[in-house]
Length: 173
Image 1 (cartoon, rainbow, N blue to C red):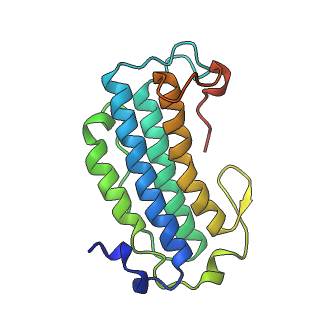
Image 2 (spheres, rainbow, N blue to C red):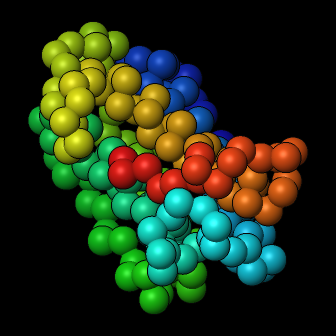
């Protein structure tokens, strides 16, 4: 059994849930990204910056998945989780599966022994200027790949009629 699933291996099960959900959503995003790539889904007509590619979206999601764990460890004064740098845009498609596995491995250890209250206070300034407790940032980390998966589904027409093109922009975090 994957030790992430072992309830007794975690001092705070709420953060265990966030780690498991992040893994599920990052994998779902990557699967959807691969379908979008295979279908040659176009970003034309969206508000993504001109010249942005599906590979740019993949790098963006991986960048933040890495940054959320690194930031959280910094704020909780935990050791660096040892996440490798994100593959370059030119290499990301070829390296995505291995990199996602590596990245998810980085998420599995750091928080196991921390008590619940370590995740609620204090609030820390994020790299984009908002203030979050670590718990809220971890929840944000779960939602981020979900948002981009939905965007890709909308572009492919897999989520109904989809939003107007103005709703299809790359968030900056």
